[in-house]
Length: 244
Ligand code: SAH
Image (cartoon, rainbow, N blue to C red):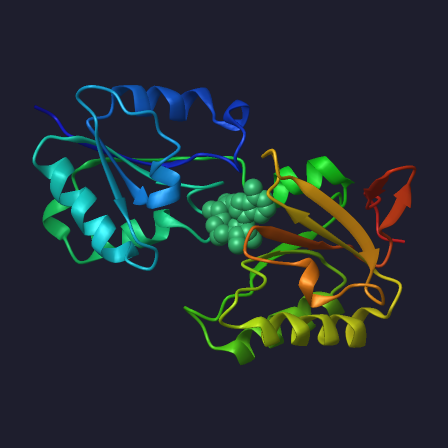
């Protein structure tokens, strides 16, 4: 038996946004591993073991996947969106660094549609010029580093996408984020709150920084901030392709 391991992105929610490549890997897998709600998106079938685990156990999960694949299993680790964006692909390589004996394994990373790009598409083209992505969670980095990156990105006039903007355990940090953005970008800059994109609960709301409140974001929201040229056209928001 030849085992393999794929780290796959399931996209933002809609089944139509799962790539054919990811579908094929799931159809051929013996084991699916990941955070419970993502594993729940994979249909059970005979011959497939589903291993849901809690959040924040990424390295254990990656170790488990490597072990199964080395024993001959065909394993898919699932992430939402894209597996390389604040997700499992890096966790897998961290685990692999510690296991040189497994470097020969058949490992593939299968891209998916990340939340920021799905949200941008449903808003218009707010990321049409240079942009960056920032994870606002301080689980894996100190908060002062988040503040520094925010300020420098705003000063460089990047459009921005924020992942993990606000959770019950750290509500004050998004309040602080809005204060920093108002300082750096002024009150009229457009900000889009895109919640549960591509699911039946999707809600997309664009306001100015002056109108934005922390409650507009939660953990199912990706936040997009325009650059200085971002503007509305009809019901859409777009950023021109050239700096002006
Ligand atoms: N790998 C994922 C991101 C994981 S971090 C990706 O590429 O999309 C989890 C964060 O992603 C959430 O807190 C939220 O900010 C964002 N997110 C994931 N799915 C989303 C969706 N359907 N709509 C809006 N934001 C989403």
